[in-house]
Image 1 (cartoon, rainbow, N blue to C red):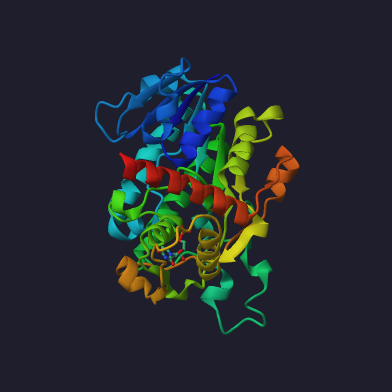
Image 2 (cartoon, rainbow, N blue to C red):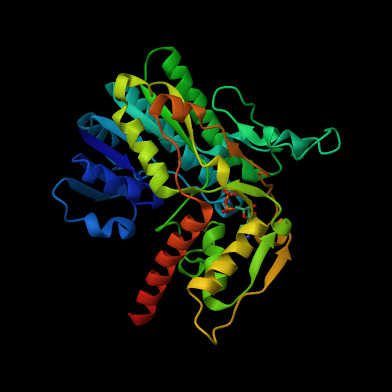
Length: 357
Ligand code: UDP
């Protein structure tokens, strides 16, 4: 198959590009930076085109016409960016992505659209903290693709522009499907983690996801900052598990993925951000610490101080993965501790490499 992998040089995209090539697929990869797929650039079945899809001269039509399958991973996907540049998030994550879907519809191409577990928003427990008998009941935080409601915060909390854009795009795809004008599958990732995720804050404009912030604190002995006490919870999913599921969606045996939405996540790996920080400190001390180096202090910060105004958090989200289990025969294998060690190893080897250079 010839697969157009839009955003194929990002964290998920790079791992997917590697898997697609290993499966003998032909890949056309579009991204703004080749850093994470550098080792594949000479591969005879990979064409890498460095392009921002927002550019006027981007040949979306031709690329989609020439592909058998289109995978769309293009998005801003870090909360710091939703707060800082909400309009740009809407423009890229909705307006530009919509063009991709429309063009797939026009040429009758199958589309795998990456969305987000952010579309579920907050739990009922967060919205009505005093009205529930047991706000800790995990059932309140288990989200299913086809039955769960979305609870997004008010417009004044502009972090939700990301979830709103993703959800609107999903609804448009669904509507195309209803009119039989698009063969699509939507993927909602639940906090994928692994080698190649983000960069250290010092290498970016300071807005990666939490793992990289904590890694920087560990490497430099600076502060681990827990936003609003680190009480919020996430289910971390190792990238190898995720790619296995995504590849089964690419294969689409029996067309079971057509017009379906899939949660991809590890429900058993739920952790609060405070617990994750403590785990990372312990693992670092046990496996990587060099005597004499400074260790980080853990401090609490308000979300306003960390992100600026307009942030509100998704308090808890546990994926219901029964659909992926039933239709794809998939389940995640990796435990949180393993995935943290593997991701830390990657960061440290990369960082050491940079020091030597
Ligand atoms: N967070 C934190 N300290 C940091 C960065 C993030 O406590 O240095 C928190 C953030 O407020 C959220 C969680 O970690 O509750 C996960 O944030 P992340 O940016 O990784 O992405 P999200 O899962 O919200 O999409």
